[in-house]
Length: 265
Image (tube, rainbow, N blue to C red; front, side, top):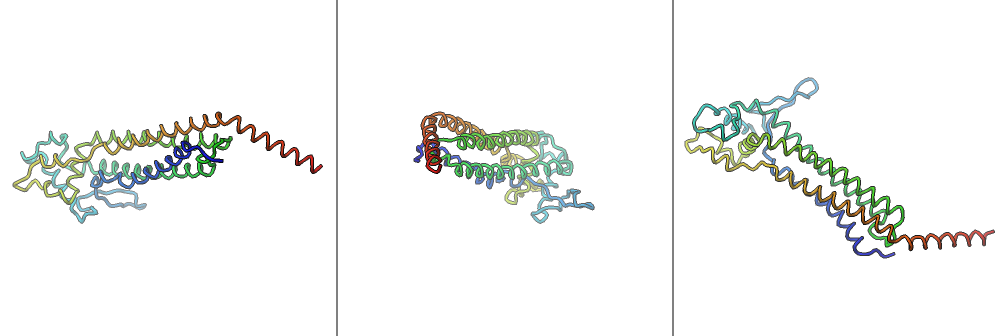
């Protein structure tokens, strides 16, 4: 039976949305690329994190970051009030940066999982032919409600996680931005306080760590919730709207079965 185009495209677009989610996950960390701190794992179970200025994936360039903090309170070139009154020892903040980076990595993985779950639910919707059936049966009704509901629940989790990360970034705004600037090889030169042309304004102008990416993430998952609700309502309405045709088909099938039984007898 032919499907109406509205149902077909509503369902197909749902799959496209989750493809976009996975693509978004691939670029999510771009804004936070240089928000990291070098470390080594130690201890008997390799579960003890140790920080130091020489521990860096960038061949020790992280020393620029540690040196920059060491100038706090030591030179009039730096007005610490413009940097959130941070202390002059980066070691105090290394664990915080590490924890936030780990949270961002975990959240990025969750975005990928959300996209995969969405595509799996979309595949099941295709299996139940929700996109192609003109008449909806109970299998279409139940799948049309349960599968989008799974994505609604996961989207709520993602929104809550996003809000938590926004709070962490806002709370550590200056710290994360200084780290991002001083860990970026292209910007490290402006973090060298010993240079005669040093200007703290240059660092402030390079700030690029904020919550915009996370806010965009919230918008995406709010849209997924809204779309999922629309699909659920559509499934219920279509099931009700095709009740007469469905009942006639079922009646004909029962009559046919009854006739065959009679002939066999």
